Image (cartoon, rainbow, N blue to C red; front, side):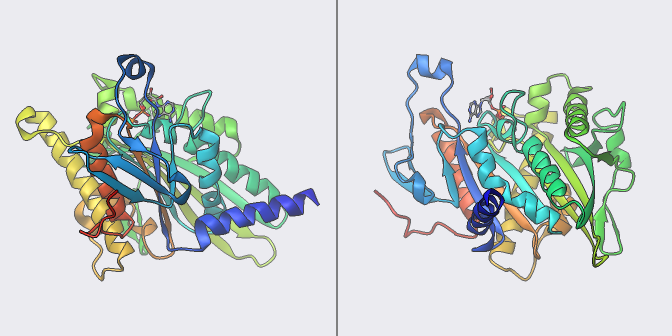
Length: 357
Ligand code: ADP
């Protein structure tokens, strides 16, 4: 009885999140003010009075209030469990043979890494979704058999680096890694794929990737805010009764910070970094919104990131983007940019009919 009830509950959650609408979901998550900001008395411009309906209100500069609507909105009180409860149906999709991309987008410091990677005491989506995959694999044992492997890579300045390749230094391994198309499938030949069969192995792989990100970087935090960190979970499934096989990929992506840098502030390497971040984030926005509006041309080849994800965006693949924001007044301009980007991604252009309060 308990199993039936649980299964029914999960099915309802799955339907609510995945089945009823198109293939692109946008969740908005706002981080809390940190202690320093609270003690300085920083003012807050994001309001969640409509959060239940997926709406939030931002007091824009000049006191204009703008309403944004997403598939779900998570206020600063939402914890990692609540976020994952709404993300977990994507694990079922992957094991059913669908490709899934989960992104965290937003200004540096808004909680992208917190949502995806989390901390030891508050684990994020990357760890939890693998845990959920293993839970479902166990539940399906006897009917279906699965093989799961994980790759960890980074895209920095339009170059791909394998973070599981030992001794891989920024810019060194990158040159050898290119995207190839074989039998209609895009992949990176030579990329390390670590086979995992339990959560201890997953944890080890995730840690190896995290540690490798720091290798060779003079400032690890700065480096990670300017590169895209990508986990690719590859799933091979076999139905033991029909013999039917499935292959699917789950991409978990902590994107580079979306903040705009004033042209006058940067030169040399920083300028190159800023240009490649702009290029790949706008290419991503263009691809997802072209898919959402069913445009006949999808510009996958405009950046390494979208090229890499070509098989997993569009078609019957599923996409989830977390747009991460800060509640602070000082960040309002960046917050509005991120929310506008996310609205565009959802395929809903905010025209002049924008609701104003
Ligand atoms: P980003 O990856 O976007 O640069 P981080 O994930 O590094 O941002 O977050 C910046 C800081 O804010 C970190 O110390 C992180 O632990 C904290 N933080 C972010 N979101 C939350 C949250 N929802 N709850 C508690 N702390 C958070």
